Image (cartoon, rainbow, N blue to C red):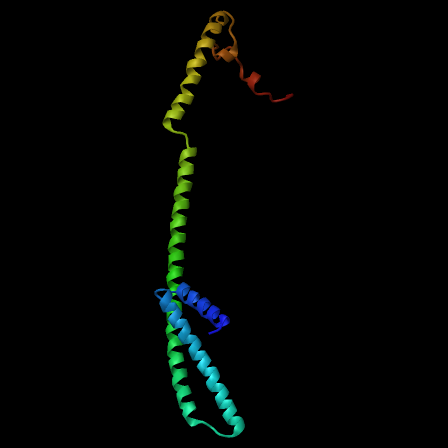
Length: 173
């Protein structure tokens, strides 16, 4: 074997392992060697057939053996194609499952983010409690001096004190 043929066998063996057609490295190498031997023997027998046809001596025995090799090759091809389709279907299912898991994870993260954005009861009570407590204390002290002076905005007024005409301007009559 020359270096090119060894490289071809190694690359084919790696492909067979990637596709899941071989169980281990040795099995992949054996399968690759069988495939290349079949191709080499086909090439050699085709050369013999063409040489025989050029010289005018047909070889019927080779024709029948070629039919056997092609039938074996067809079975092997069908088997490889079936394994490839099974492998592709399996990987697509795995990808589909992974995508579904990632979608669920994204939804969970979105829910967590929305949940974290909403204020909790504690935050609402802490935000609302300091405002009333802080606001009345300073307002109580200024309100005592303001009691003698009545102002309509402070709430110390009667209905008779304020007329509706002051609130609604109708223009010239």
